[in-house]
Length: 237
Image 1 (cartoon, one colour):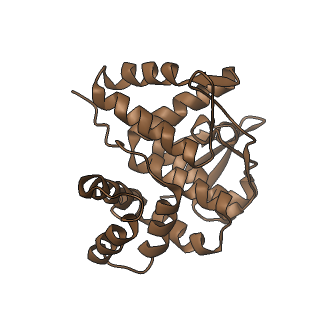
Image 2: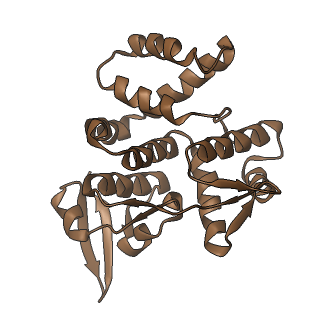
């Protein structure tokens, strides 16, 4: 069966910020109206604007039932966060909303572990291996790459290769807790070693040091020690 793609146009960071801010206080019907009005300055075409609204709503408003609680916690945090922390929340919500985005950034994270520069052609080839050699896959790959470039996650070099600028440092324990839950839910595992969380390729643009003690205090996670030095993290519900 052909895998769904969905992520088919560039998403701007200030559109994500606006959506997250408004999602805390508006109904679904109101969200569609205010987004249509807000996006008119950047997206003139009705069809493209409608598609952008659908994507933004899927990321921050119409989420799967099992992540409603996580989304609500993220929305509560959002007003008090700095731009780097907000970017991480967007990154996590897009990962959960769009498996195509998740798969692409994980491929990029793996590649950046091996090399300093990642050609877009290599990313495109790997996504076609996963999703098929279709025009829609090419469009979606380009949309993700253009989006994360515009967010400042990667920089483009000559020859359509990408490099990773300085990693984005995240020290806020609440944001780190969000990150851990996203990893567990996105990878569909029951438990994950804390060491794997610290360097997980899904969050390759970010630098963080998650504390087992703070995770335990959050009441969201169960922390178990296995053997001498392996700490396992799982969700309590």
